[in-house]
Length: 305
Image (cartoon, rainbow, N blue to C red; front, side):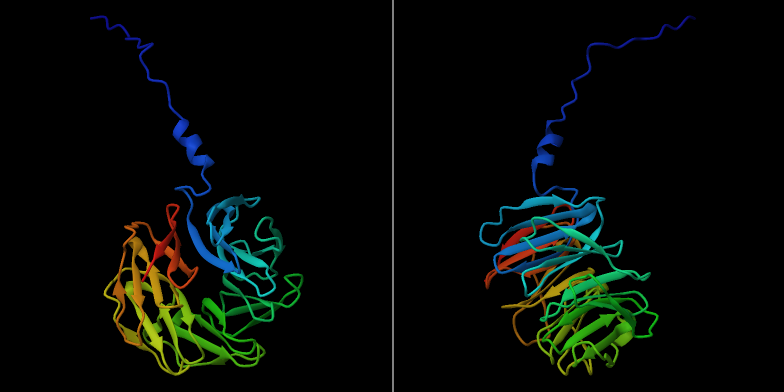
């Protein structure tokens, strides 16, 4: 039997690409994976994958979008006392803005180690930390750097300055270090139990601090890092960020948001926005408004009483 080919023609629907065009017009897109937030006076900045930077006035939150050349993966951002914004990308590059996050200039950080976190100290020195307990510092806005190590084969995941003199480092295997002389010397403290890997840390003052990580774990210190105890989180979801303010907040996988507004050990779960993506960072814009940043274009405000 002879089988003849069947030719279909003229019945295919026209491909509608209008949705893609509209998506590209939005400053915030579903493909954005935001990693960190920072704000200074009236400006707030969010950074994420593929070199994406969103900036806005705190009061209006009309976001404007910037995509850095080369689309580097941005992992952290901070605001300096002098008004600069600084951002860190995976390729060991410091990005600096001196015009309210409208333009950014790259500077290579001279290290072979992987860097995970950066901050501006109150004296505007720039600090970055990473693998093999590496600590990098620049006192001339990134033009030159000094590199040191704590001689631990571990990843440092966080650095926070409380004053010009006092700062904390946290990292893999429960490492905690403190300086009381502006980073000239770092002193090891009692490790966080069970080789805890802190995804994020927040110190309210020299005595009180919190770290969060996998399995919904929240650990707290009340004695300047000399001892740590586990607090009840009510979740087993990974936690990626923790911050303070009117009330302490921790955020994580599947839109998890935990609140702790007392001196107690229990964190309360809340997700009034219905976010299903991960939340990587949270930032208080004022006493009642919390900004959340995370996966699938998550960049939303939340009003908390």
